[in-house]
Image (tube, chains in turn red, purple):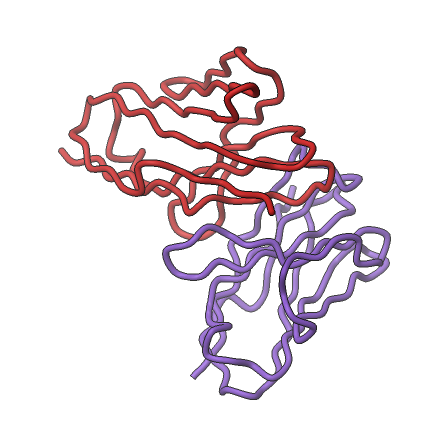
Length: 110
Length: 113
């Protein structure tokens, strides 16, 4: 059975801090790993990773995948209150369903 | 360009009743997947529809069924509702059963009392 573990489960930081969110996975016939941000209802897409060691960046967010060790990290630098959300990772296999972890709840305080 | 549209946004049902949730995919998408998200949990895959057929199914009982129409829109039906079915139901659309451009709707919040 496919399995995803995210850590930490929750995190409270001050604005301006840098955070690292972790995602480890076990998926049959792994193809890609997606990161989403969920503020209220609809998860919004952040990154799709398919190759090991290639960092994807978007503004203050970046992510990298390690297919040998079966994990991914999401980094957020210079955090802002608008970054407060649940961050979800979801690997995919040959079946195009997404297997989600429980998520990391990030709260950024002033 | 409309994104993924789900209706209704909120719903309250009684145990034992049946419910139908609806989803219109993003323009250009032909694949619809449904997820159940309980409070404090990540979304759990229910099933996926492509070319009007159920292509994949997660670990959900037969009380959960669905349909896809020729215009790619989809319905999720749940029979004999249980209190444990209370959750946010998310629909996601994509193209060709792929995950590129996988887009979620805002969901339907179902409460079973």
